[in-house]
Amino acid sequence: MTKKSRSPLSRTLDSLKLILLSALLVLAACSAKKEPADTVFFNGKIVTVDSAFTIAQAVAIKGDRFLTVGADEEILAHVGAQTRKVDLQGRTVIPGLIEAHAHPETAALSELEEPLPNPRTVGQLLEWIRQQAAAKPEGEWIIHSKFFATRLKELRPPTLAELDAVAPDHPVFLDGSFGGTINSAAMRASGITEKTKHPGLLRSAKTGKLNGKIRYNAFHLLKKPGERKLSSEEYAQALKKMFSLYNRVGFTSFTSGALLPEETEIYYYMKERGMLTIRACLNIQVPFPFKEMSLDEIRREVAALGESTGSGDEWLRIGALKTLMDGGILTGTAYLREPWGPKAREIFGVVDPGYRGIPAATAEQFARLVQAGAEAGWKMAAHATGGGATDLILDAYEIVNQNLAIRPLRFSIIHGNFYNKQAIQRCRTLGVIADSQPAWFYKDADAMYYILGKKRVLTFHPYLSLIKAGVTVSAGSDHMVILDDKESINPYSPWLAMWTMVTRQTERSPIIAPEEALTRKEALQCYTINNAYSTFEEDIKGSIEPGKLADMVVLEHDLLTCPVQQLRDMKVIMTIVGGNVVYEM
Image (tube, rainbow, N blue to C red; front, side, top):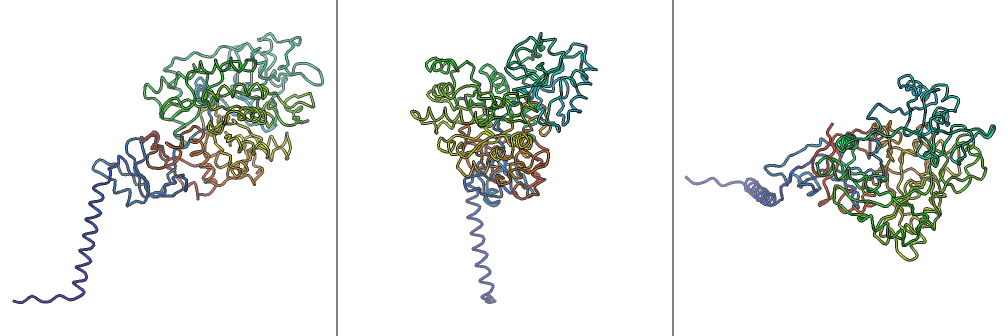
């Protein structure tokens, strides 16, 4: 029997099948050569935060590193027999968030004994003190370890009479870091009388008598009880809990604001025992009185520190050498460019009309420290909450830069707060990083508006002006007490912070200087690649790119497109550090 001839269409279809089969075989051969991943996340929106701000669909992880990132079909080719596949179901993935400035060491211990309140009114504060007085034995101290009166609705601390009324027999100390309030019982317990002469004990302008307001330079006069001594294991467990809460909001790295050299030991203890679920960079507080020392004396002290910026590894490393250049804006001790003004008398008890705050050192004194630190390879950083202190820091940096280029060392100003055009330009010229705390704007911008006026508040946290000028803005919280991310005295929620940077809205609702608002992309960069740059780690983290540490976060919503309120209240579905899940909802 003769074969029936086939139609041209059939032959064409056969040819196409052969071509398709050949293509599939080629793809299979290529796939066989792909390095198998440990985990593949696919069917999502991967916001890489690379230099092009690339958006991908999938990412593969091998060991503790990102293997590759790209389209689904490309990344799924890395699936092997042992590969874990995670369907993101359209969810958004971002790089692990980095907290630029926090104090988890105090925060972790702040509620070990009992919850610490975050009062919004004088009445709420007094009620807490009344309850404490009823529960504690007579004579026992009542201490709020981080209280800022300007965050109360009334924008004032309780009066001496109010404190005495609710706690006549209990010493009360409301500690605001650089200033505070005490009652008569605290004065009696500390041996402070009307005859005690100290510039840090403030007096009524009308009567000349002590009014209960105290500045940080007089804190040593208070005869407070000693702090509870914890074992290393107890302390480590408290920190581990704090870090789990950081993981819960998306943090995979953080920088500790300032530790004395011996205070870093707890981190080595935790690292040796595998207790860290977050990467730590530790700023070192200057442990010697540099102001009255010669340059050679400071050099010897710096050399005695041994390690310098960058020492350590990907889990635990040394950051900047840090000192203070003024007090705080919430206690009237920040060093401003101009006098504080009449509202400071009302709120902080300032009497001198020319009072600008309290500088901690001169530019020349600080410059000697900066010189010695820079010579030894330290990144230098200094706390400044007022514009005058910011200028002093920049003066010192400029002095040193005349003979030693500081740009490669990425010096920073911590807090800064008030950046005028001149300060912004100087930061740009010197390569100085603006280490900012966006939640301070949320909590404090309206109080600063009331106290200092519109003109000065226009220079308060001017994020967009800084970024437009080419200044790197890093973002953190200065978290110090209370475990909750939004109810902590300095909220550490990165979502509240990014929402604030985008909306410029404050806690009391006013929107201040909306022209300084950032895009969501810019806000995210401040919490990722900018913070990695600040610690010299932009080559290993801060973005999702092949070869970088596999630190990333899966989100409930798309932070780039979701309604703005969802940005503030963003939930984290999963946090991954080095390829390992450290938090999952």
